[in-house]
Length: 459
Image (tube, rainbow, N blue to C red; front, side, top):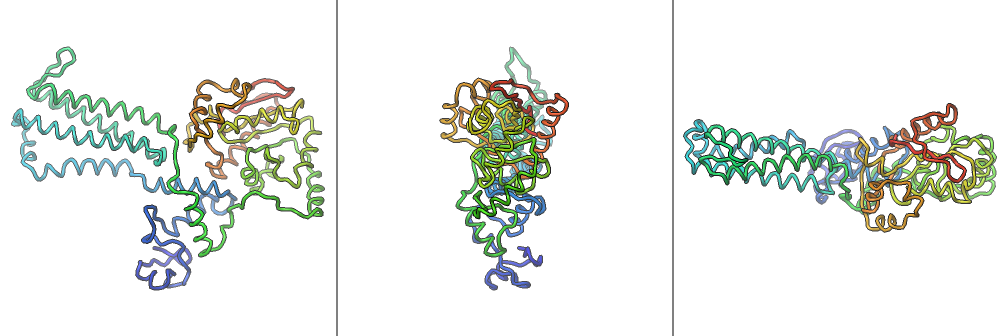
């Protein structure tokens, strides 16, 4: 295992004999793969996960974002590539033939007797059936990422096509005929009928699972307790993670500091406001200076950041040209955010403003080209059943059914870079509404005195 400090590679004996430190620079190792459970990784793997999420140490991220990110890194690392599976499939199929007389019979298929042909085809079909069952279970597993499920579905299609070809070749070489859709051969109807059925099933399952792959809810491969333990080990060996944000909290407690900050805020004229469902997302965006880059205010629906929330809201309510962007999870609470902004007296009730729902919305998840990390819980299903009528009316039947099943997607399942890009593009689209009155946003209506738009896609 290589030291992340000096790059020296050391074996277990060298590390353990040096109190799990690098034998060259004495830097401590945070993790020892030989003493870990089923999930094994090195310091270098952990360090690269941090650097990738932080975009080479340039962006701040939340602990929950790292939870999702590291879980996906581990899952993708353990995915069997398609070429590897195909090679393994061929080796397991061919190797037994090398130790049996069947290999010599294959040199002349016309010498197959009826019994030999039946046995060969039956064993061949059973072998492929076992592969198909295993691939189907893998493609349906909530512990496997979308890419792995798609790879399994593709492999099922390949096996189904191969089975169909083998059955066809045997049928042709043995002068088989088809009568009323039934394959008649000297090997008998049963063997070929079963083989054909397995081939068709594999092809159909592969096609079905490939379309379904991105819609299957996932579960984490490790608990938040495990992650906390790993982060503590990393911090002890390497110090705090610079770009990982603490939990959102009131950072300014001095009244003098608050007065100074309020005076700075009033120097700006915000025409745009981003309202986040969670304090953590608002904190992440502010920490990455998104408000400066887009000349917009960023608040959470819960009133974060608390020291300046009242001052910012007073300024925003006085701006008749204000455009509000709702940024939320794809969840019952999230899809209610824009409606809350329209109807709450604490926000913009009876106000003539433009509200743009960026998402994340169920329709954006269901129609997306990208792979979202979908999760599922009974609590979300119960919350979906309690959605107010106005919100249900704004959703399609497919969206309501998706939410009613307990499905949800958190914004923190996406990286800071992805979220910032989505927000930047959405604000640019909203700018077209402000200046030209035209955009590719979908106009929903003008209820509650405000104009309401939805983005067709997430970013």
